[in-house]
Image (cartoon, rainbow, N blue to C red):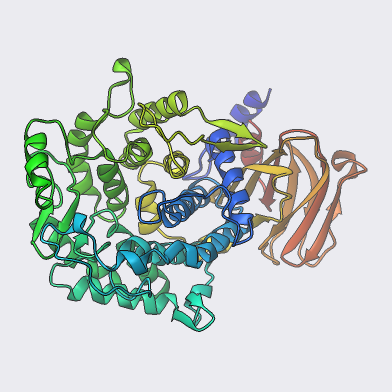
Length: 551
């Protein structure tokens, strides 16, 4: 019947508004993405001195707090931007708490020891140097780059410049010693390093410039310029010069190198596996015989996914060869080729993120399906979690594994490129939003402003247990605009400027209530027994729009 009404309306009133997308094709949060969201909100909501669920013994390695926090933040930013752009308060609060956790001393105190240098990054190492505590003053882009990137994403998504305030990024060692920064100061510091270092990049550990870690300050520059009208993003040209001259991608194999070594002016890679005597006596023949490889789906995936955000053509040039080299076809078992990575716990998540980013969704789906088959994820109180498997079998996992898979699931084709290259503008802050949902008692599947139809589309459902009565708010309404509130196809309330809300009790029900909180906000209180779809429609509303929306 609805389809018939829709077809009749097309004849009588014409087609959908230009650029309109069928309502059932608008973004929705899937089960796995929702499970990741519930897990991450719970982790972020813990007291800042509570590290349960984050535990790791290796703050210098890939399971370190900084990587867990950063990649959760990128997964949530992708969800916010692409899937639930009209429900912001929960994401904003969660990303803010993750940023505060990133500033906690247990995240960055590793740098005092690491800054003394290590022989694994310098084949001519002659002993430790004097280290320092300030984690962002120089080098350590494996931490400072994420701090800048996370803060810049937050500012773009919410137009909240809290990290610009003096002292907003303070790294406190103890009561007597602290390192005081803010985002503009940090951006300026990173920009100077990238443009004045003779080699054109920023070191992670002493002497080692990793291509993947340098993506994050570049993307922070891009977002910061959008918010502040600056030109720091031009620093990418300095890095590109190094990227091409090193080169950081082998022109024959298309593989991303391990890292560039500043003192030696070379890269660590299969073509140059020198790490220092006496280890070279063993490593060289192993590489030549194919018994060991520096080729890495993790390095290709991480570098490629984030570099695609600002240099997509270059990444897409190398991707086919990287996929052929690293991805096992589904009919041969799927996953990534064993023995191709020093960090197998990470390779599937990183490469799946890259595959989605370049539009190879089939490969991404195959990798994620392989991960679910082999990693044995489980559900706990509505949250999707991955068990820890430390043994080096075919599918080991650690604390970062699930975070990377969440990032891959939250990404979309061109997703990172659009997140950074098409940041939200004035129009994205000038329409109604969903707010103050009783999450996780109530979960949100859809929250999207359908601009061609001037309609806020919302899908809610109970979390784990029956909800009974719940409430939510619709905010950022235009005080000069009239609206109709529709629940499952029936108008339950109408709003006119400067007038009380007119409720339709015959459709709203005796236990439902819609009340105006201010000229630009209303509160809706209703029983929620199952999945329920709401629409806030700006007046006037045509027959064509009514039919198409309820089809």
